[in-house]
Image 1 (tube, one colour):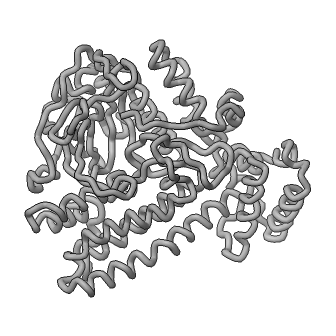
Image 2: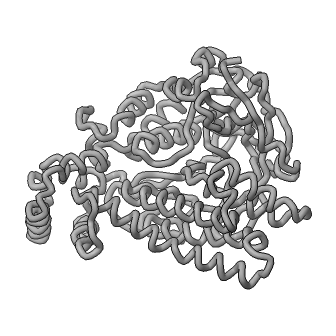
Image 3: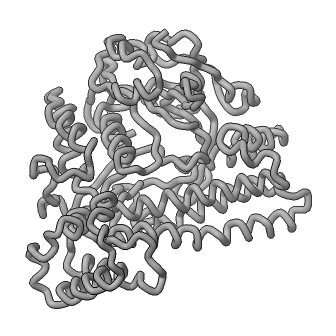
Length: 477
């Protein structure tokens, strides 16, 4: 039905890892948004959008085997046993090109792991994830995707009564660092090996015959996360809740909660209302990445070598590569942002000095970089400052001396004109939640499809208003 091609290999693992359970039935399923382009990429029948009862889980798609996955996680540094408390994985859909994706419903009702939660989700957070995940996709950042958001016809109660909704999330898998933290703590000691073998087979089959596949797995995930976080930094993205249960083995961005994009450049920027000490601030994301990877490495120690001391040495050596990998990717991404394809470390001072000026004069991160790409940098009000003029002349001289004639084309391709500005996201969510008016939502979704295009309404191109300076986000659970 609807061309779903389910092959649910995760359920061949021990049932320690999941609970078979059906989503809750909705009173009245009503589609808000459907990602037709993604459906076509997945070879799904787009007629699915006309049957929202399948998108809330009220009716079960033939071939699916709904389940809630078990995992653990270090949340703000503290270990907790967790699991899908408001989500159901319908199964693994395999496309015609043999690509495998988890099809997950989020906000679909209580499970074994719900604890005191109601298993539901409000419309706002589900639409936020749809907006941000699709923006990340169009910004060329590895990410889980969003297929649809559907109203359930039932209200959920947080501080007030809000319309309930279900998000259909598409991911390469839902394997997390927290899944491994859970496995190593189960009574069955075979679970961690079975999970590691499964992760290798699913995501990195090229390493399964290597001399030490489990050490190779660690190295692969280190590389993926170093690359991902460097990309986050290059667009000013702040995840907001980098707990170990929110770090994937595949290297995709997942679990969009209190996430946001930085407006005014400030390395200490924190948006999440619950991150009172700035653990997951913009400038801490790289180091938290290493902290999370260290927790992942700890779970693999029994597999890397039978001698614990030797295994730890191997793991520490692997983790020792993270910083260089991250810095390498960071330098290259930011070099491209100023028009230098393969910037050398000795020339990176140009970037450092520019970011220092960004912070000093409280410049908008996205639009200032874009102005460099569009030859409008010298037209901006900030150009009146002598140190900014001095930097620009140094940069201009560098570009000319190195005959980087394609610098502006390069900058155009990596410096977005449009991001999902926080104030625009809030306006769209407010209209959708309060008035069931999706006009702003649809306009924003249309705009973020072409983030490197300047041909948009100015409201999408302009920086945030000063009133947005103290913007905060909330988990929205």
